[in-house]
Amino acid sequence: MQTWLIYSLLAVLTWGVWGFFGKLASNYIPGVYIRIFETIGIVMTTILLLFFIKFEFPSSNIGIFYAIVTGFIGSLGVLFFYFAIKSGKLAVVVPLTALYPALTVLLSVLILKEQINLYQGIGILFAIIAGILLSL
Image (cartoon, rainbow, N blue to C red; front, side):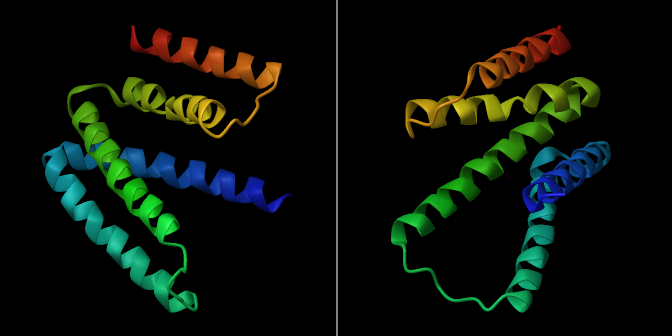
């Protein structure tokens, strides 16, 4: 099995469990607090990573900037996700919010000039239709 596929499946597994535990937490505390305490888990992961890699400060300032913006925007997205699962059904919110890659693909086509083939375009269209149907 190819390395990228293994990592992709591990991402699906961990994100699936992450969403489930987020719903459990939302039964007891508000989304803002979930995000605060979740950050402790993120810091713990970061500390572990620092022990396992030989950290050298990157030389690309723009890369650092994009990484910080990624963290900021991703953190807001997670916060909105917690607000959604607090009042919505997990079985509806998770598939609907899982459509975010469609926006990522659109941005990559428009801004990065990446190309998608017909089958990929049809797949994205079906994903969007599925998201709409799930939210009804």
